[in-house]
Image (tube, rainbow, N blue to C red; front, side):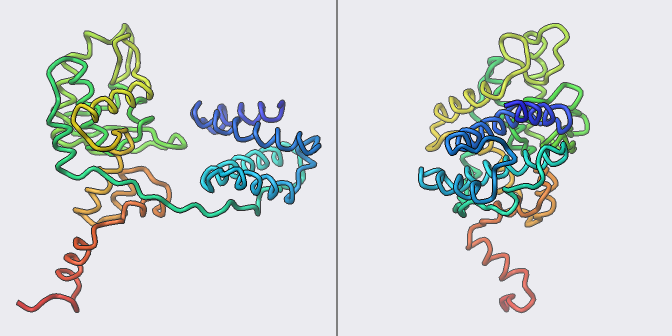
Amino acid sequence: MKLIDSFISYLQTERRCSPHTRQNYRRDLVRIKEFCTARAISDWRSLDVHAVRAYAASRHRQGVSGRTIARELSSLRSFYRFLLSEGEVGSNPAAEVSAPKAPRRLPEPLDVDQVARLLDGGGGDPLARRDLAIMELLYSSGLRLSELTGLDLAHLDLREGLVQVTGKGSKGRIVPVGRAARAALEGWLALRDRWAGAGENALFVGRHGRRLGQRAVQKRLRRWGVEQGLSGRLHPHLLRHSFASHLLESSGDLRAVQELLGHADIGTTQIYTHLDFQHLATVYDTAHPRARRKG
């Protein structure tokens, strides 16, 4: 476990990974280490490509999804890159091993009417105003949950309609805040000081006066979804996904959506291109020079 502990420490100090990410790495590596121990593989130098393939196959037989196996192999590859840099091993046995292909599921976004019903249902008490500001900001600016809960007051510029967020890999970006979100945030900020503890800089705080946690946001949104009669579970990523889908559907600008979402790879953004075929046909008929219908 000593080398795993050193790797987790490296993720924290050098790569500045979040506690959640570090926990995932540790869980994956401990599981692989248990597999090695059961097969009398005594140390990380003794793990070879055949054993890594056997691990992936065993997880597949257990019914584990291809996505989860791919993440575990990615954790192992990253771990071995660290071990190589430290001179602990001479090769990376996971470098060429891939997981079974997992079907890529496209989450269904809320439609515009559902979003309107959700966001128009806000109440006047402080908790409801805070929750409305959270949902408006998630939908207005396409923030990740971690980005939202990491916001400080100084990151928000309501006069200019901008918010500065820190995304994955500690990469910062500035995204616009829409008119409705600005109004909701102003409503929350008028009440925030009644709740916030002394010296608390967080934009969103809970009843205890401290920064609102991710789990608390998830619970509040789930409750809002039930109260507003949404058929599926409401969660922060659904609002981010709806933001991206609606923006892309209206603009067709994949690069702009990529920048707003903070995706390093445009291939990640392309999951949002599942536009309605009728919409695509309409765009094609009106925009393509050889397809325009004669009046």
